[in-house]
Amino acid sequence: MKLLVLATEPVSARDVRDALPGAEGIEGAEVLVVVPAVNESAVAFWMSDSDEAIAEAESAAQRTAAELRERGAQARATTGESEPLLALQDALATYPADRILVFARDDDERSRYREQGIAEEAERRFGVPVTEVAR
Image (cartoon, rainbow, N blue to C red; front, side, top):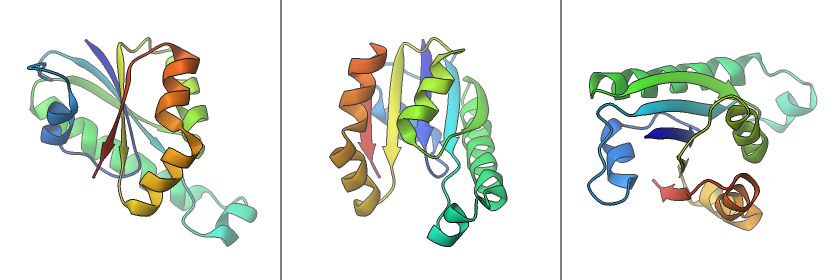
């Protein structure tokens, strides 16, 4: 299985495993973890000061991939564009995933992802099954 995990903060291997349908496990799975570099501050966004956002995204992606590797997955990490669909598009250009898991961390983010129809649009646009996971 080739799995793409999109999250804005570190995700545990258990969360990933629990989000998979049926009895699919993560052992032996190929996983690409993508964390969008999202500026928390509107001022930082408008000033194009993305260094902090990129560093935080890289850290979250690396932590998630490391935990997945500890559980037997072949996982690697990368940062992505701040717009989730663009981050998915970029990742899928070089990584042909069989399934996408989109982790949203809180009510505001889940609401924003639902309003934008991230999961539905990604599935329609990329032809890959998408599961949205509330955390």
